[in-house]
Image (cartoon, rainbow, N blue to C red):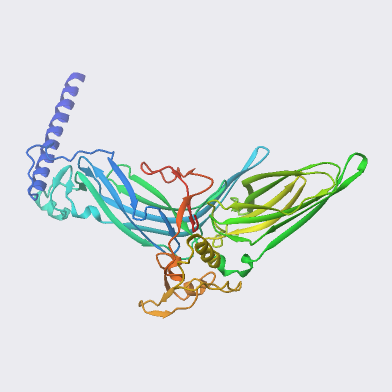
Length: 496
């Protein structure tokens, strides 16, 4: 009895499989009848499915890959395949944001602190694949027109038909151009220990029923930090400190006094910083002396409960050892010149990250005399004119007389302001934050180079990688199979 039942069950399964196969064959024939390309078997005409692309890059038109805020960024997505690939869409994403993150340990407990400040997030569908062929259920269709399910039901009304359409990217090299105008009030790119300000461009190959293929490129944005906007940055600064030293049994051993002077406090990368110091050592021992160029970074974040946390880091950019000061002596004024390396300017437009600089005179590791230093992205124009004259014997800016340093509340960056219809409204000077223009829904067209608006004959800056070198920018949340994992921001230089 059991054997008879088993035989009947096997016969039923075989008949059902044969009927199902005939039904699928009939469905395929009806679909292919609409296609100019006829397949002679169920495996013919099937597009190869390969996950790997031979090349998937984002190439920017600017070889420096560095842009001022307000500039237009343009480039192309390059895809190279040796065999046809199923790719439904090629998507593009441009993003800029600041982010801070760290973990706070307290005994056995841990608190994760993080915060982010978005600046822009633009996503585009390039529609590049829409002009290529479409495959349906694995068979290729030469023209990218749809095949409605309703029409398919007319060919086989007894069966419900579900058609999966897939576009095919032909073999060869494909270039997808793009362009985007950056917002004008962006902070400069920055990579720190507990946070960053990062701008990226990401391209995605969206594939049917498979993981997307992603490539990512980071680029540098230079925020508009104009040294000319504050006249005080072009004035000399000085600072002095004293320390009364004691020995065993609270016995006084003398007083040490140090004084430090700078010819000005505002600089851009590549400029020479002239520092002078004098030390009076009235103690009974010789004291070691050194100069340190310091970067201080402040990171702000929040816990899961919303409590604000602050973390500060200090990095020594340069340390210059000086001759020790002998006991009971006063040194003459000593002048030291320091070339400002490739450093990020102050981050005036960022609320969760700030960077400050100082030049410190350190005596015996017990006395520190500090002078604040401001790094900008637009140099003191008077100094740039004098540097050009000293190097070439004449100034390249003779057709554009230099402007005087403006008071602290004024600015000098000229822009063209247009209304919603594109008509010019005025040629007023740019305000510090541009908030008024943003609230009035005005558009500001920044020139390709900020300096070209100030001085049309002034050459564009050149760029150097950050003094601190490249960092790992791979992100677990944004898994990218292609693109560089290491990135170093670049900062502008105006002098050799």
